[in-house]
Image (cartoon, rainbow, N blue to C red; front, side, top):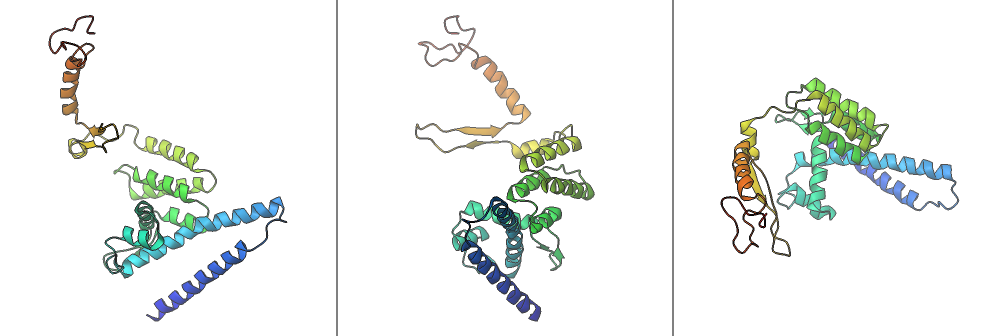
Length: 257
């Protein structure tokens, strides 16, 4: 308990010092600064801006160990953050998702575990990668095939982090796509269970013109059935509702086509 209290005191003092430093920097004059001084200041601020989320991840991870959303007066952690910080639930979900990947974890027996993406978390804590890099790297790691072992997965992440330290998100994304392709050039093996899980139709929101968009995933069997139907009834000249007598069987006339 003593260590926890002392750690809390140190953190509160450090946060207060950050607030004071920001206030001091905000009140500093900039009109007489030259180009070199302006660029140096902007570079330092960018580094600090990149570092700060790492601290937030640690604090959010610890908060979720110490208490629950219900004890904080909300139904979910998304709601806790959205109400307390006046942000959207989508932004709250994004921050919680990043904290789950980049913050420390705790096992069922209370043991502290490293982040899911340790190399990314370390680079962010040093301020050498930004939020866009984090998104690209996280998405790339999530696309790794299931057969990739832990050592290869770690090497894949580390390589992307090294690249991100010296280039932009687009280059990192391109490199990740190439690496993913080389790891699994043939793509995942077709699987009936996975197809069955993904099949279905989704209805969109009805628009102002009363039309409702739909989208979906069809199994090979379902598409084979519909393809045969479309080949016959959706052919040029068939089933045209604007015709006085729509052709629904046989061969449509040239005029109907």
